[in-house]
Image (tube, rainbow, N blue to C red):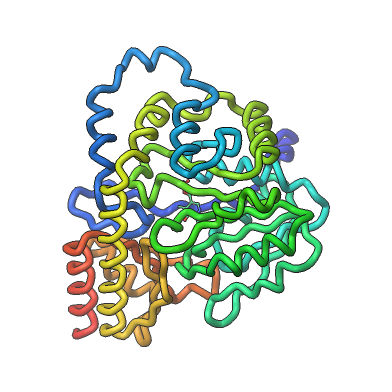
Length: 353
Ligand SMILES: *Cc1c(COP(=O)(O)O)cnc(C)c1O
């Protein structure tokens, strides 16, 4: 090894879900929304002034921040936006977790948390979920450098109620508690109602799943003004212009059409119930998902075998093989009714052979 190679940062990266380029596929592997973005977004896109691309975007993301502040009834100074919630979360880890004590998060959760902790050399300690994949809240009542909870959790899909989250925040007033609400719109009560009560709470959300805009990369967090000031300073120490012109322009439209938003969410939640029923009939056990995916294991057929079989048919689902506790589970995004019917038929046919 050359001398300069010894100075390389060694990191085990996060592995995102595959983005295959097939035309005829059914893509249920990265929790994208099967429905198009709001009609206002589509229309605004047609009127986008391309000349804007000559200019740097608004470093303050003022219009988008304003739209979110109004939508969630908070002050502009309580909102921070980023390039997807991954950007916001990464920035939050860098901003708030500078203690020598370990940060705490579950052993089964969004696997990016561990990657950021390693990247920024933040000590961490994972807390095991119980047999039913539930968080044991008392595990988080000990000295720590920060707490991160995804609610609903991923990839289990299981949500905890607001009192449960509040207990964790209440017991951790000496550290920042991040609640990652990537899937909150699919039927969970948000912790946003607690941000004015607890200065140490940061709630992170995204446009990627519930607002059908994964391709645009918009995420945001809401918290106390002190937290937002710090994360903003960190952003300006890293990249002033994170949000591009198109995201800033179209993002504002995405929060305008409440009826379209609610209708799509209802369709996905209804399809989730039907999916759990159908998969149960086919011999799967599913968690009680409150997200736009189900988390399922089959009584006889290994997850990897099903994954490969579906892949042959160009139906993509996800498996997290590196964690032995969940290696035999499939995470299946809720698609349209037609897509799910194709999935059920493929599984049914395979089981009958
Ligand atoms: C999808 C997801 C994210 C990141 O989403 P972005 O597309 O970066 O906004 C963050 N946390 C969890 C738990 C997710 O599932």
